[in-house]
Amino acid sequence: MAVEKTKKGLIAVEWATLVYTLITTIFILVTYVRLTHPTEMLWFRAQAVVLTLALWGVYRLCPCKLTMLFRITGQFLLLSWWYPDTYEMNRIFPNLDHVFAGWEQSLFGFQPALSFCQTFSHPIFSELLSMGYVSYYPLFVGITIFFFFFRYEHFERTAFIIIGSFFLFYLIFIVLPVAGPQFYFKAVGVDQIAQGIFPNIGDYFNTIEFDVHNRDFILPIPGWEDGPMYKALVIAHDAGERPTAAFPSSHVGVATIVMWLAWEAKNKKLFFIFLPFAVLLFFGTFYIQAHYAIDAIAGLFFGTLFYFLLKWGYNLIR
Image (spheres, rainbow, N blue to C red):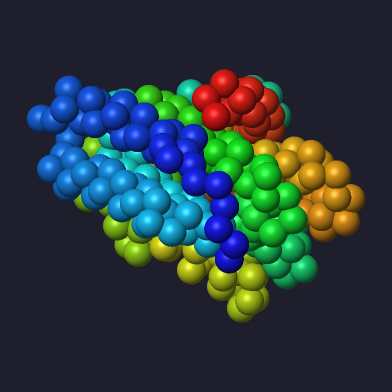
């Protein structure tokens, strides 16, 4: 990799990580006695800061595209820790699923998360929509890699927009505790949901020690269980899913941002390759009962909002 002009300070995406770390650290300290694992959460934040500074130091020793890639890859890897961390914070608040399920019923007259998978139960639909949901990871990683190799001048900005959007979604998730149908429907009973009854479960999720591998806490994922995409979905789901992050759908939001970035790249082939996966992902979110349909719709709005907001913000701080 060729040596590039050294960027002496932290880059925008690293500042985003440090700001998010600071905000959530203050939250943890204020709510310390109400949290279940506050010490571990603070320790993780210290490690995140050390990793960020260490990767910056490596870049300063050898400023090139490869070490810049290491810096940004480190921030992407931290997302797998930041996401379940939101559950540890929002579970101390009263759950709001009954409100969102009620809105869903008022808007559609039924629960799409129940009806969609029952109406379209054929293995072909299951595999296509499972593939759409699983494509979430390849979509945002793929667009970042594209900019690294083909639009490097916008690589840092692309990473900032994507990772910055995750942090904005996570801040919403912390103060808006909505678990989603797969958890809420299981907690109150599908029979009640089918009758249009949406009980308020209050601090239910703060009274249990949640284990994603314990199926007593979660509805079975609908679909063709022998399908390869379904199996990939289960693996991805079990890797880190928590009763959190339902509204708005960050899956749909980030996929929307990816489509804006693909459009911005002025590469029609890239855009139209990504488009069917983004569409399948949209419907897959409530087909597998991870989200309410209104979560997916809100994801389109927030994804677009965050794309333009972060694009503007990058131009201010670069």
